[in-house]
Image (cartoon, rainbow, N blue to C red; front, side, top):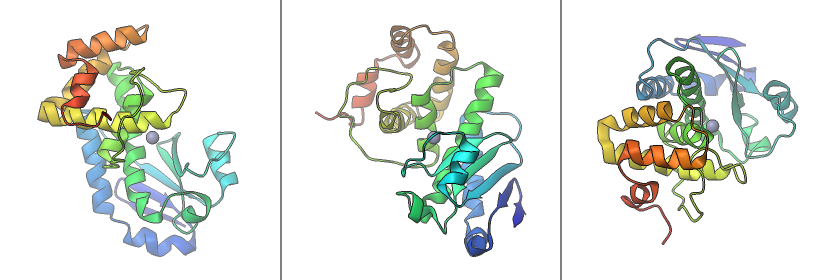
Length: 226
Ligand SMILES: [Zn+2]
């Protein structure tokens, strides 16, 4: 069945009817606004389609990935569609709980805003920042210490989970330190590095925009393992 709810259209099966009816739509709308405001995005991304997924095969079919890992619960696709394991099966096929679905939806919505903003404002699209901002907006504080070297400001290809850990802390520290202007600084940085050729470029532009190096920034509120 398909249900319209303001900016959202959700497709689900009978067994998830109750969950869909009781989903905190207000909170989801708040998350949408938070992401929109963060990127100072003019205009709406609407409708956002939420397609509940019922098996790993279906997840692969829509995501285009080759393999489903049990930590994967959602992805963003064409036509502003979020594919996410249905509450009735998410605990069977993934390590995630159905209580996490709301935050995960906000996380994926934030990816849409980054994607569209990057196109409109000619901003670099960097996985570390993409995941960090999504985690921050969705309040998915993973509370993990940075016990690895900050060797990149774009993407930890060796271990993508580092993008989430460092990304969250990075955005949180910037927002805490720069307050209301934090998002502007981030947009400024991402715009300046759109043609960056190397990590050195990224690190030096970082210092230019944030007036300090990343280690200093990260140590302002702890987070780096001593
Ligand atoms: Zn993500």
